[in-house]
Length: 617
Image (cartoon, rainbow, N blue to C red; front, side, top):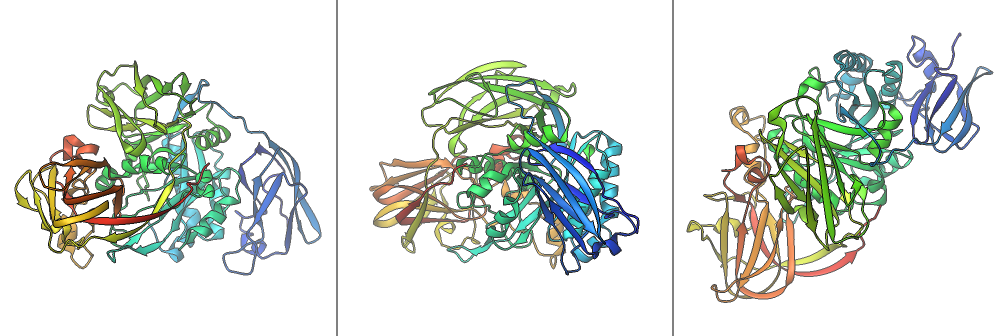
């Protein structure tokens, strides 16, 4: 049998993950897959991920090289008494700084080779799908980078490894192809109302040596922890009604483990063409940052083919790197030098107190912003007409319409932990910048023990319209209260004094009609519902129903379950709950500014609490 290693000499950087094989992509693969082959590395600079075993998906004729530290290694494969060797040189990462002269590159960090979600059908045609994908992206020649990330539920070890092999053969001189997977983590939990939620989701992973489909977070942690420089992206964080009812909820405040914070670098603010979901995704950007994640915004097509590539949709992820290379792009992604632009046309750089974003700032109370805007192509409609500064809690600290190719402004804050910018252009298209971090510590996550106050005799009225609002307090989240206006001011009379220390707000459940109701399913549009979900709110209490005192305000950013808003214990008979804006009005006001607000349920609570420390990077 005449065979050889796929490569005899490899030079690459610390953190890279590369394939090495004997005939994996040849007609001899099936024979070699079960051959007695012993793989070894003579140095801890390179470790090996073997896929050998007796199961049908396993093979012996290929390994992934995980480049762990600077040095040299000889990787050998011994078969039939013959040894085949590859000499590997691991170099130090060529790291860029945000302050360096960087170039702009456009790409797609979440893509699939096919619409097929059936495992058996997928694996019988995988190489065909992958080759078509690579050919199509390369022939178009308009993307600078592209991640091939099929679902873990359809992959097996052979098909995952094939990603690396096919991309290696492609010699990506036109587009930097990155092999990966979309790992599924399915954690289903019933909430206090008995509503089942997917408190987890799908995460695109690349520059890793594994993939996972699991029903708990631990296997996912273990899967990504074996790679020194993994890149993970929270995919479509507010997906509606896929696999189960309701909206997905990643529970960032619970899942901010050191392993997750180390791996996750992005969160999709735009995913494909799902308008209703894309109204909500951006709120999870600040929510993830509040939970300690070091993330930047991502715009992904999530295309499952055959339509894909640059022309699939206008929204793009823009990456800032010193050059067009795999090493430079991995460095940029690991260090948050990328952002999402819905128009696909905005080139953005900004500094805060002289440091280019993304950056860790020196401690300060005054933050001086300098913004530079340019464009890939001349198009007046993509020029931003508004810039907002977003900080803790997703709150907008400043809005300015004084936009030009170069402009400055100043923010005063002695509490902010991070900032990012949100631009809106003449068509309402949005661009979210990379963050900067101020160095202030994040809050501790509070796990609360709550007891509900009996509201069975309470009344509720929207005093802006005089309409009855009792559906908002009846304890049934499916009995939705729908307001008459974009805003509401609901006064709840509990009929007697109570000690109140928290309010539980539950958004209306957004569910797609089942396939058994095709007529309703055809007419149903998720944006008819997601646009009505409250965002900005304020809570007031009163003893006599005349004099009210504000207890809390903020922005709701969890749409897949209850949000508990706590404040100091207070004696009250009346509680006023003000809806100040909605998802539609905040995200795309030119399209959804008139969407009427809706509420699933409101609870008044007494609270006991214990604390655990927030995970840090």
